[in-house]
Length: 406
Image 1 (cartoon, one colour):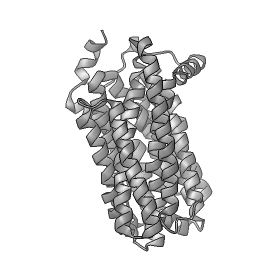
Image 2 (tube, helix red, strand yellow):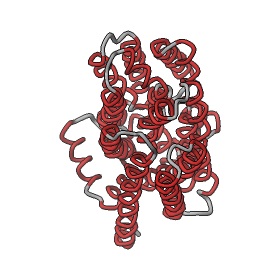
Image 3 (cartoon, one colour):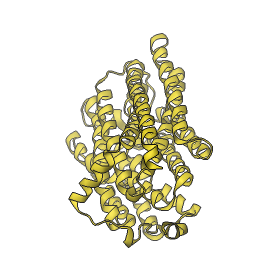
């Protein structure tokens, strides 16, 4: 019954359109990262407070997921996406004209909230339209797109900041979002038919959230995603200061370095898409964890033996990000597949749990003095240790629940 309504939306053109939703949640963060040192100087504030604008964006992005997911389950994906885009454009303009760090905090909070649609809506569209290994493959493609933004955005952002400054960067970003709004308005279909929509009732939403989070397999998989994503975002927040202030690279040069390192994200997510048919999501997570451990240990040793060696730092970070980029989409696909009857809420809660945790990790990372790569390596070591524990708990829970599921 569900298959007949989903089949028309399974073509590559549709998948391409939902891939374009990804930048809503990623570009406002990664495009902006090379500008952090310049913002600190222009607004006459500290590096810690400037990095806190990243934390605010991430936390509010996480908090926006459940409301956006629940509303999309009630009203449909398309309407919620278009309204979120309007809010994202207005809040991005607010960032461009912010006269102080306090105003920038507020604008980034709104921007983060509406940017949550980039994660929730695209995965809800995929969950509406695919199942089984096709869903894992689609999540791998979405993950590759999600990973390509950190590859491309910092390089472009570095060029813009170096050439025009940080405020024009936000105006360019607002124009990009306006272009997506026009494209989605004319081309993107609705995938949630009225008969499958759930009434928007706060009690039922909270009950659904509670029932979803009560599932041990789901909750531990959310934690796997949370710790894996935290590694990526700690890099986004801390690396600009390490490369630009301690190693004295320009914003443009750092953008190209981040482009090269971020390519690891693209490799990891692409591997998930290619290997989804032959390797289970749990197997993909194991491979990803091994790579994170290798990269983290390498970064830790380099901090003790060869501090501030840009080549060594970049290689070890690249290996770490490849692993992180494998664990994230695999854990999300597995978590969402546990609740096919409430894809919107399941997708939203993965992001909420994940990004609130990411925000805390970035805040802790922002308190560290990045004079060498060693503090970043220690944060990565804690995160990958926690991710490994979460994975082992998830595997144990899945095995216990398997007989009940079958």
